[in-house]
Amino acid sequence: MTPLLARWLGRVARLAIFAALVLWLARRLDVATLREVGGTVVSHPIWLVAGTALMLLALLAAALRWGSLLRVQGVALPGAQITSIFFIGQFFNSFMLGACGGDMARIYYILNGTKVRRTEAATTVLIDRGIGVYVQILLGCLMILLSWPLFRAHAAAQTAALLMFIFGAGAMVALAAVLWKNLFEHFAFFRRLEQATPLGARFRRVYEEFFRYRHRPQALASAVLFSILNLLFQVAATACLGGSMGLALPFTDYLVFLPIISVLTAVPLTPGSFGVRESLFVVLFQTVGVNAHQAVLLSLLYYATGLVWSLAGGAVFLGHSAGAGFNLRAELARIRHPSNETDDRPPATR
Image 1 (cartoon, rainbow, N blue to C red):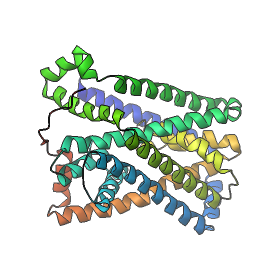
Image 2 (tube, rainbow, N blue to C red):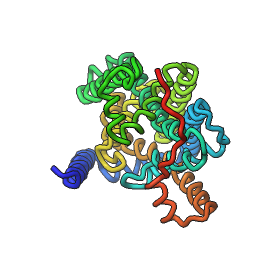
Image 3 (tube, rainbow, N blue to C red):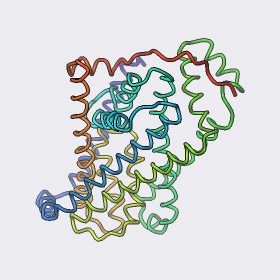
């Protein structure tokens, strides 16, 4: 199978999954009832404003997490610049299709913002993403165990819980394998890979930075703390959006469900996770008495509050490209093909 054929088959499969989920939701929804629920939301604007503000705090916590990882690498960029780059990444995650995602945008701008330890700085984007997902997986699994009677009573929710446990086990195994020993120092296969191809040498430098955090517990603890704050602010934002619909759910219900939704929608089964996110909201929140119309609208509001701040990132991006003297098309081309220059520091030995 050629790579082109594989990409097309992947796109067809994703569209098929999307269509099936939308059809499943459409059969459960009534337009008149959905409009009625939406009217309730409009009549409680304070809850919407609070939810949107809390989502901003969640994103700022994530930006601070990335900033803490950059400081460990000796990247001395102002906090405002790091935050601006982070929000540009949010814009690309939400609105740019194809390979030019938010992580690529962050890597591009961080490479252009520092002249030393460039590979190390770029690697923090991957570490930042990994820590955020890892914390959500572990906290999600913990909350599932603490709320197991709720999941035991609903088969569909059990499926979501099982997937989380699989991700949790996989994350633990992967972390142990990566941090137990330096792969390049203890396994000949990886040394041959490094010597055989330029990509292998680049991979070693990236891997060395992952491995380096084994000896930096304070940096990891700081990143984990910001990840927990990010999740709690997201949960609080979702609870406020639920309040706009008159949902009288305890905070713990949102804390149980949101990590599951965040982790499972990180898998790109459909464009923008549309359909997957809404289906998960329906399946999980119906276990605590929320009907399908309310769950779908809650999902859309949750997504919309993130889009608000992604649009703000788009404004930052336009200002950034204009200030650098590039038009929009030229800036997008530069992000898709960032500079490959790195510093000459040799890989650390272990």
